[in-house]
Image: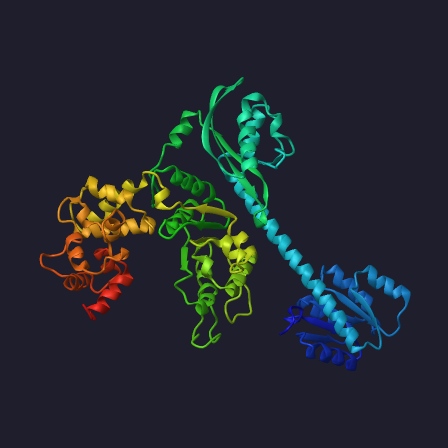
Length: 594
């Protein structure tokens, strides 16, 4: 196995003795380093250094014309950080001291032994690799900090973060202006404990977060202030975690909600772009989208399957300055792993078997707009490396290409996986996780969205009623009760399919329990196929799924398949069974082509 520092180790050997240049090149190349280039004069060496990047330079000190010391000085003037090893047949203290002063990595005396050369090269390249990794990490953390500061400044709420000693570590501009207007001492380094008595709630909430390391839910408090009289504040607190889940303090979010204009603005919304729901959980999602949409940072959307993550992406794009440009969506699970790299980055003609033409990747298609990476948690470690490099540099190389391509793209990713657990298990890169999660928006499951189910069910009923050209105007109390009692493991997407199926089967103006799927009925106490009710289930399907009189299970399946033109996914939804159950039934009844 090739050692890491030998992979693409670009080395320049400078010496006016051709035999020595070729010997050094042979030793280094056979050891696995490369590419190794050589120069016989100071001018040749400088031309190469000006036009190329090297990981190590090995130079003779004594050459015709300019010396190796001058070469070292010019390398440093060009801000080249690669290590330089000096070689000479006439060592002296003055020359060595000058080389060290200019930052030479080491000093080798002729005749140079092979083992000494290789050991010095290995140590120099290892040190340079460590230095580059540190620089890369520092740049990544600086970008991460800048992204957070951008979000911090743009959020409409007032924000104060405190350390475990209740000292202010950050305060956004809105909070600073508010504190200045009230003549409060709220600056970085000040203590919340020094706030006047009316603001004791700030100290109490922050202390509760610090002690329990849990969120303090949003609540509203009345404060009697000398300058403003009685005001109402909405306030909440959340714990702050650094990398590796290290607890670092608490964040307080608050706003004066006394103003009637603000109360009008905050009237509970039931629709936001294509999202629907009036629950507190969805109000928080709408607010996050409004705050983060205009800020050009990477966003990670999390939540169970079917919660509407794609709709959040569309809303973020619509709220951003890029709304007039393209939103490109990539489902990372639908593209074979060996093709995902080409799909994202594009490829050049002839770069692999079957690449008979140049192809523009999805990233380039999204230039100027937004790139949505759905189910990003499922991509391989190899593609994670390429994606991380793109997110850091905003440049990429198409497959088979040797010239970098720069793009201006906002990246939004989504996953239903627990990325923290994947990071702990070594299945997802930690640096990519933090690069994607500059801001995260979590979509709650349907079971946690208080009172949203009825609203969504009626919206879907109206939509499918129009599509099917029917006059369905209501849902019976019994059907609604069954819907409310169901667990909804498939979330909003499953509800949509259930209502679509009910509308197709509905013969009147009201959806009844008879039109609901087997899963919904079974979860409420009625035997279902999923719970082992497949034996003798023909009569159950006829009874509960609106079958024709005297129609058996086989005939019912054949009829629905014909109605859907053989679309098995849609047929399974109409039958109220899983697609796997439908395939099993088709095999049982030898239904080949309906």
